[in-house]
Amino acid sequence: AQSVAQPEDQVNVAEGNPLTVKCTYSVSGNPYLFWYVQYPNRGLQFLLKYITGDNLVKGSYGFEAEFNKSQTSFHLKKPSALVSDSALYFCAVRDGYGGATNKLIFGTGTLLAVQP
Amino acid sequence: DTGVSQDPRHKITKRGQNVTFRCDPISEHNRLYWYRQTLGQGPEFLTYFQNEAQLEKSRLLSDRFSAERPKGSFSTLEIQRTEQGDSAMYLCASSSPGGGMTEAFFGQGTRLTVV
View 1 (cartoon, chains in turn orange, blue):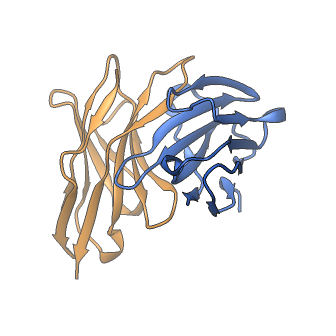
View 2 (cartoon, chains in turn purple, orange):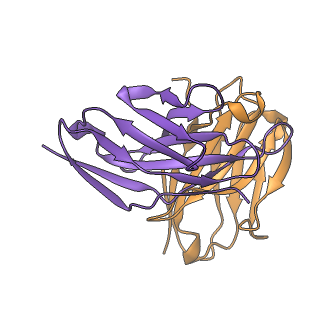
């Protein structure tokens, strides 16, 4: 079964410093990986995805993620954190592809807190 | 606004009552998903529609839950005889055709509180 793990419940970083939010995955076959962000009492907003191609994927709001097949990781990164980046971040893997349901399997989330 | 719309945003109901939620997906999206999210957890898949056909239901979806998508447009999720354990955020998402490569767009969710 497909799964993702987010080993950190919370990440604290000072504004202006680089940030990393970790995600590892377990899939059979090629992984389709996604990052979403959730602000309080809101739905999820899509940030970026890895399907194929370059291992470094760029997304919204200056975020990027690095796909590492040997380490089965897909860490989210940003060179310089903003206080407004403080939110809950979810990594997800797509369950199946082609004719399958294509539902997302989510991690438990990582709360990012950026201190001014 | 052309995003996914959910109604209501909040619902408080007494245990044992029935509730119904509505989701309007992005108009050109033929795939529609319902997820449930409880505090401190990631969203969990409930059910999936491709056009009007319900193609998958999670084992989380007990007999008290039913979802429909008549005409392949909006969808409704009904919970009968609500229980306190049903309290959660119910999220709807839609995506365009394209296999597993297309991202899903989420609505803002309906927060259900069963008292």
